[in-house]
Length: 472
Image 1 (cartoon, rainbow, N blue to C red):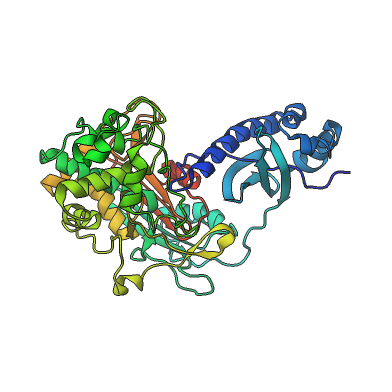
Image 2 (image 1 turned 90 degrees about the vertical axis):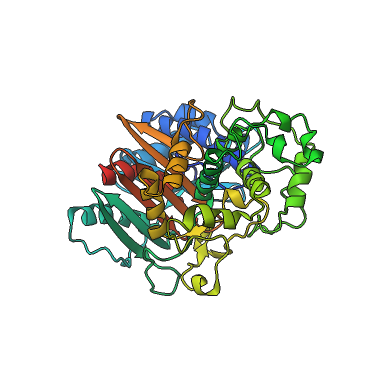
């Protein structure tokens, strides 16, 4: 009889999995493709096709009849799959959570050079059974709805803390769950500071839009107009327009070719990547696609955009964000570098298996993910994106919302658009080594949601699941 040791399941995340390595990104895409097939075949109870997805190594240890018996005895009695979500990845091992009608399982695997499943493993998924700290008063209908959706997430073993903000029907609601630091019962609140990762890209694009409206730069300008001559002579770079840096259609790779140099700290990978290294990578770089034709999520492009904005203004990226956005909006807790006083409100961050890790520092690529912020500040940011009393910012935000690439996924300047049942949500997520973030708003309904977490437990699929339920 086969033990519960052979397979895992996987969901295609509606997340861009920001700020990860190129290798991890490609590996994730391959695993996503496999998941679609595995999940489909589990639902169809088609073991023959599941077996066809396994590696030669696996087939040497188990026959198709063995696999059929295993699924009939161990998996199918659990009922239908109700939900599936990404959990973690480490050393090319991908782990997911499967929630069946009668139980929850973890499903982990790696893939070989032929993109076949290696060492697939089902194992019990143990949820946290003790109480979860929460500031939710559980009084209103919304309070109870939030709690019913958040608690299953907080029961996951890698969850640590979660701060939530909602704007609905003209009112603002905030909730804290878990803790700012393991082994310390301190709830995160709406003023707790988190890394926001790639949500930073929307700030970079807002600064761009501001300068476009001021006539200092044009979206159609070639990027070489703003680069040193040593880079401008690269014919590949001459093909890229400014707008392509903001909407992920530049053709530039996800990360610069020399990103993983000898100075890279695996736990703080962006810290030592300097403008000198960045420009050296661009000097002879080749594009992956013709600019403007293909969406391919990139950290290189918004990083370069921020450097161009610095060159235009003569100011640092953090100064630009402060003078153009956070200062006028009185967002007093949103910075790239935290003062000692602000650091007192900054969470500890946790990576795979909820092990404490380093917060990330940025140099050349600050525009792709350097900012830290709070739920209150991001709610202010979302509110002003929907309707701002500052005329310059209102014009900049409105420009950033205009679609610049209409294929899937539709995108403006920085913002992605989710269009569903006649509603349009502008959204972005973020991720660092030990943090996750999500921000979305609906201008028509004047609604918004912010989720900030201090662990690498993925929240994007969870956010998309609760988004329509909380905001409708």
